[in-house]
Length: 109
Image (cartoon, rainbow, N blue to C red; front, top):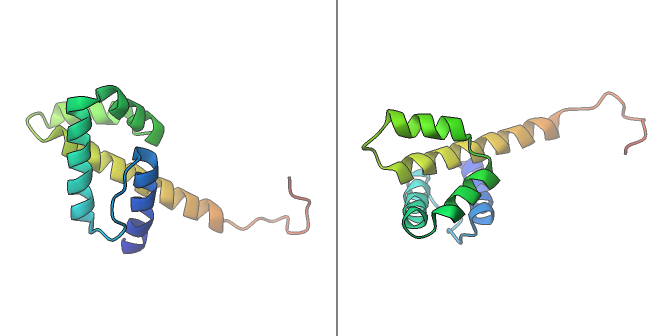
């Protein structure tokens, strides 16, 4: 997980235009991301929606989660969804990168 964590932080910094330190624990990352999302909820909700779209957080999943857990910290729930989505992307890239091709001698496009 720590290897993935070291990949998540730069990705989140890039996607959300942040400058989080690259050496954070998962708890610290979630806390700082929650603070930033709370700030966006209160000051620039449109930007938050843009970021969620850009990161490709599943809107249906997010709405369902927020409805199920009313009274919980919405920013923290969204932060967890963002972290989960970034983890999915990292794992997917690793799987596709390590998939060998059968056409070693074939011309590449």
